[in-house]
Length: 212
Image (cartoon, rainbow, N blue to C red; front, side, top):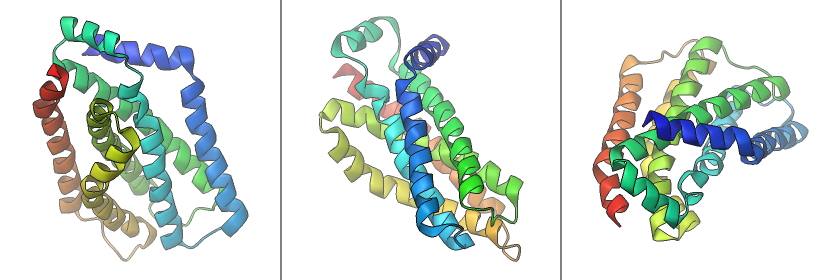
């Protein structure tokens, strides 16, 4: 798993165009929002942030399985187990999404103001939310790559799967903008449980895609 993770990391470092392309997408989108609405109120700021996070994750993670050719997948099939392969993808995409989440948060605060009352709590929530989104869409990217209907499958399957996590994230993040509200530990534990469920489903179900 570590070797496969290093392979993806080295490819990303050498190619870089996809990484910088996503950074450009984040920067351009936030700059357009800045031109349109300047400094929005807390609820609008929060909603826009998670909407951008969702689309950034789709763009960042969708290529994880699409860039692997059939011949290369056959080679991986002969040297690695399906659990190691999918866990390496989950780990790499989680790391990539964490970097993108921090970048988006920094640019949001730079261009759209800082209505956040609990900065450190919201920063931790952003990292946890980026991890959750990356796990879900990595799992969906594996299915979409096999179905050869990539965008359509990710959109159809992704919406019902990501809605519970987005609802929990919005409830938690609203408390970061309003000091009267509290961040319930039960919601954080629920989010962690959903992440663990996605990892477990990936490990259980990916071998069937792998054999195909």
